[in-house]
Image 1 (spheres, rainbow, N blue to C red):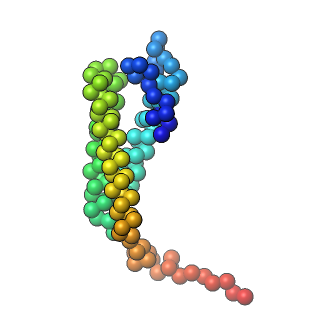
Image 2: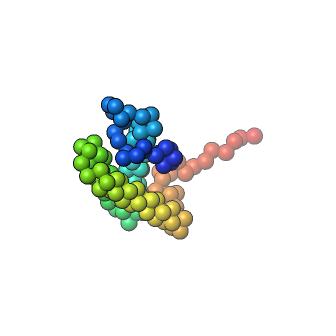
Amino acid sequence: MIASQIPCTSGCPLPVGASFTWQDLIHTVVAVLAFAAACLGMLQMSFAVGYRSLARLSLGTGVAVAVIAGAGGILSLARFQTDFGSRLELAATTIALGWLLILGVMMALWPVKFAGVLPQAELEVALPVA
């Protein structure tokens, strides 16, 4: 969200050298951290118990977002085809948002009853003695 509110300056230069601006530095750092956090969340969901299809979708989208956003970032670092690199980053963002939408719908429509997979000791609740 921060990266969307603090956009790059014209041409989206790397925040180094003579073209350094705080705006570009903040945008770049926050965007990289956001992509990394999104991929980590997707990969964590790939271990979801009781949601086999969501787990597989999460693994695929996590890897796809990491590869596509990474390729866009590398193109930007190399200062080669930066327009194409920014489109790759937009594609990675779109995939991540689609995954988030599917995650929300699946969690709302098909809740898992975790009581069946928890150990018996965790199911027992201690009642206070009067």
